[in-house]
Length: 250
Image (cartoon, rainbow, N blue to C red):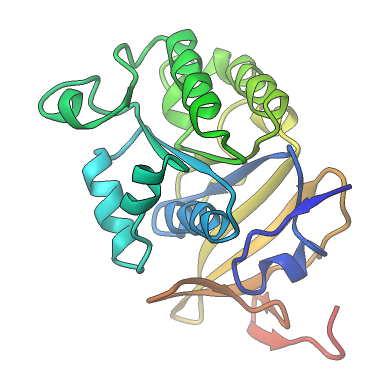
């Protein structure tokens, strides 16, 4: 099975080579855990490898998304001009200047069918290989009973077009699930990001809960957010006593 390298330092080691192609991965975490940075880094590294990508903005203005990415040195504008990166505006509904500047706009933010049609068009136009939906929670937050069917509809389109995708999922602080009833059963993989207080200090960590099509580390690994993005310590694990270095690797 072909694997898609995330390019995030340390993560591909944990995934034993990367994310299996066409997989839909739920990236779950609470506020401040680094979900958006993680997903944008995944897209940026794809662009560096010549893989067209799409970022679906459901919770931030597209202008803000570009500015935030630029802070890490990830300037996507040249890639948009070349037609290998697209930003789907599912935030503004075309209000303000967005209708002048954005090519892909979801007008009715409550209409999942329209959302999928706009996304499918963007995928077709640029030949996308990587897609991020940030956050998928927004699509069903008012209709939690629709969560699983919404995920499956999206998955059908994305896997069918050959995309490897990340669905950002929001959870509240202290929540043990992954965000939305039944959502975890509709995806191929789950990576959970956490921010835990241990002995008066905050630690960031991630754990690969499941990943269809590949073996992976079953440990909780600490990670840092640097000026270049996320760096995962694949040689360390986080315990309730703090960080420990692995002996002899995985």
